[in-house]
Image 1 (tube, one colour):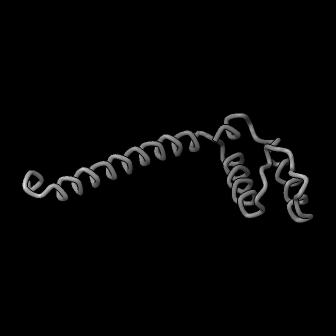
Image 2 (image 1 turned 120 degrees about the horizontal axis):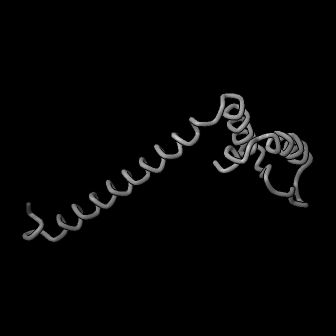
Image 3 (image 1 turned 30 degrees about the vertical axis):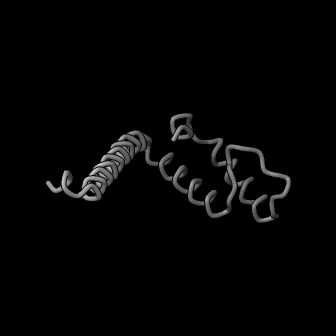
Length: 95
């Protein structure tokens, strides 16, 4: 409305539109991921959720080798999480 008269208003409007487009794109990706996740059976869903949370807390990657500088706590967590990870089907691992 005032963009032609006040250039900063136009810049602000463009920025807020770009931010809204970004938010909508992220929401679409989240919806797609939720739809994929909902196709997992309940047991795999529970294992995957637990592995993801515990791996984040322990700061380990169950799908990779353990780094040489890992703590004793991380070593134990990695062994348990890697075993759980290996039980998951490929569709769950792809999440």
